[in-house]
Image (cartoon, rainbow, N blue to C red; front, top):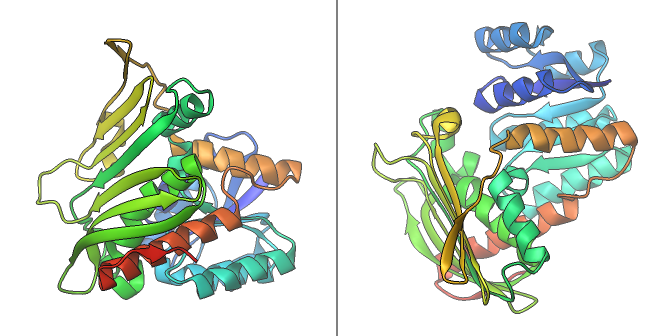
Length: 333
């Protein structure tokens, strides 16, 4: 049994606790949040104690893993705290807003000899998993082009989210998902060119990016975080080969809170026909955590998304920001 402490009792913290409750090899042994009501409510749901201080929690409770579901600007502080106590760490995305900050986290967890994973969950999302399987099996033929899109109203979770210095805006928090998945599909990015619009408080919340990969593949990604009110949270993936094309569309509620009621469709086009695929809409967050906990239990390294993968994706996001600001093609370092 892997004992987990969840730090952050908001929407994502509850999502993670719900997943752990369904797993036979994980147990939430502590919840930490400064908000007493929110923290106690989640702790009661998890069946554990609430703490308002991470240090005292780590000194008191039997913990193997620290699961960080805090606002982005607090991630580094708590990753370093967990590493200092030699606890394995899984941290929600975006992990941080700078490569320097990420490098400190990677160095600290490596020095502590603990596993470090980041919850870039689209790599576990069922329809995106199927697309990767079909690409790797050659079912679509030679891939010619791919496009990923993510469109949303601005979340109303909290004021911190609206500040670029705290959340990174749509570029880091929303667009990152599709950039991450395209890297998972095609490997390292060589260069990017992006167009978009920054809002009045400095967030790049309208972004369209063209990516050229080291292997010669090209793809585009679109992320908009300021769709007018009433528009459903929408994601799309189109992967076009010379034999077949894979097309996925999801329309949810205002955000992911109502994911169970979302409309989801996956169609493969080719040979003069359209085939609708039946894909199990399992909980991707639970799959992500099952994978992580499984590696902790077995003592084996994380494979689906490594710290090196996370760093490359963040370097691509940083390059996209530079392209947006300079209106030039930028080479990814």
